[in-house]
Picture: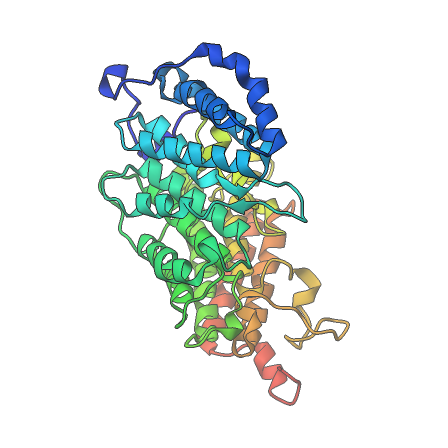
Length: 477
């Protein structure tokens, strides 16, 4: 596989003479594969089974990873190894192989190995499981012993960005699989004293001189996703405040702002102490205003020129997160392999950012979705991923048209913020509907200008029409 060049992580792997000598590979051991798989399927260790496993993996299956000519095949090797582990799932044979792989990767990472090897080795450490079972009755359990390696890589100033990204992906995987667990990364001592402080430091860090802006944004976004997966707001709401600061960054990077806004919907904000939910609602509203303002300015500029941007990336926002990576490309696109996809309802807005072109051009359609991705993130932070359309429009911000309570997530879960949240959300929701429509770009821009003006007035007033309507006796609780 190829590492993503746009991140500026590493140079090419270079020649074989640049690194430690590769391990010898005993090709004869290939014939022992069925024997080894039989040992794993039996799940018990008979006399001599440890020798069979160690010989096969250390002299053939894993030693292949260190050969320069095999670097493009490492993603395939990882999948093969995972399939082997799935054969055992749990038990002595499985545990023996897990420890053997962990020891091997630790040992080789101490050597001078090519960046592609190091990245895949750390990905492998992050993917090891204590239990590889594939059923709801016995779910996958990540290997707790791997946490020291993952956290250590992040803390090591000499470690490459490629390995740090692999470590982040591993931690994110642990967090998503351990939801509700009090062990592993869910252990409060590990989570609160090691993982969360490390992520807060990472999202607040400035861009290093040897890292691209896109690469730094992606790393920060991974850290945000990890905080959201852990679901802990912090004793004093420090995680929520850090996410709000990312949303408020001006100009900030679109990927970071979008990820942070969506992450806010993953927390029970009504239960967070020391948090002003109305202030947080204003921050998300200002994000939507900034999106509109940037697009309005850019559209007018391009219209005066009578031109459209040469490329999507030329809009000033990010284009795609991925470059073509050949085999194993999906591994670097963590939403495909490690993530859970976008929030419900946001898939229609997938893409980058920028709004230009004519009504009939494919580029215009793509770019509208890209603007929508950011606006949808702000909406998700305000009300969660499920509230849309008519649910947001009744005069009472707490009741649906049928009179049933509206189930707010995100900032709207807090009573104090609900009136402003509801009316802001209505404006964003209606604008998103226009972005998806067949209306011309001029009509879309006109609606965007109207929405921007209304959002600004809602903030300036400090109260909303909904708040005024309910002040005369309609319940807001």
